[in-house]
Amino acid sequence: MGSLLYRPKSFFLLLVFFLFSVQMISAQEQLPASSEQYTLGPGDVLDVMVYGEPEISQTVFVRIDGRISLPLAGDVAAAGLTPAALAEMITEKLKQFLEDPNVTVVLSESRSKAYYVLGQVEDPGEYPISRPVTVIQAIAQAGGFLEWAKKDRIMIVSGPDKPEQISYFNYDKFLGGDAKAKNLVLQPGDTVIVP
Image (tube, rainbow, N blue to C red; front, side):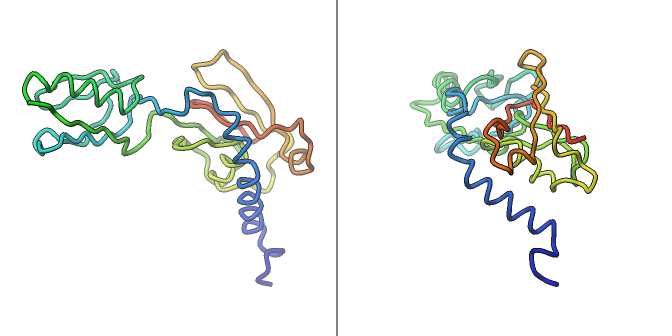
């Protein structure tokens, strides 16, 4: 009774783990070059560290207007920059007050980039993108399919940054080895709908 054959959820998670390891290489190849460096956005949590200046070093949120606030530096535009570029910008602002400031910016939590899973899954909702995520991985993250899920008509709705586009994913064909059933890498704002 304790074998994987009698535990569908355990079997599903094992299958997803296997598919994840097989698909990781192809997922990396599908990523656009711009995703190699994380660009900050509203909601991200940053650790800004200024060496030797604990009163300036802080954990900050990127506000909805895309800015952060720091002592001496004031408001700094962060959205659209990489952590390294933001560190350079803060360094330039602090040079007015400090001699040779050494600034490091570390992404503590990625909250600006997320995808959504809706419909016939165990735990629908919003999920952060901290690494490349494929459709199958997104469904696994959402706890897997519910009993009556229509696995052959999974919809992927593109995020607001792209022209409205809907693509379909057939889970059963993908498991059967159909090369046309692509396990797409999700982009920020994409929504996976399992009918």
